[in-house]
Image 1: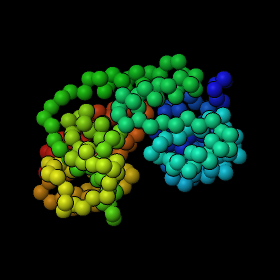
Image 2: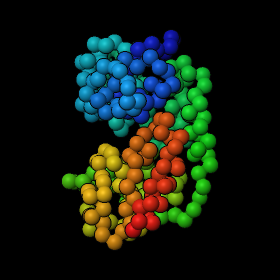
Image 3: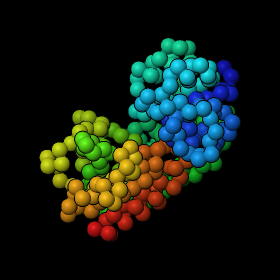
Length: 242
């Protein structure tokens, strides 16, 4: 990009939050799932998996921000074929997320990002401790879970939680609860499926279940600052409450 973007569309909730907080006024469009900040006043362009591509193109933004997992390849390709400049993110680890955020925000003109500096400090000082092996469901009916090479899996690993399916051939495999390797903890985020106290733990009798914030587990943005503390507290509460 030869000039700084002045009109940005974000199709990724965590990046919408990052841009809105760091570069106020640049965002002109976002998805219906972009819930942070709560007072964001931009054109809404449906969901991350079914965005209003024609609407995005009609807005003629200087930049469209997407993510390899959040958005479908066919939609990303359609935006590029329409001549729009697309910035694609694809972090699989916390360091990759921090680096990609810094590069994106620098490209938008942010020379210094205090919350990003704080996030780097937060993850640099995550304390060690006894490790556990966890199953991390992300959906039910059918059951699906975290598999290999996921950002959320790396977040948990850094908090002392090893994903029992980290070596699975798929990143988000469908699973049979009766045919899994041994694990001693279940981590249940509230997104993309909204697991809760009455919807999830009953499927794993005898195993501690930790109900955690999906935003802190899967989003890469300002939530990374407090994610280590929030997730550790929620995981410990699940273990202690068993």
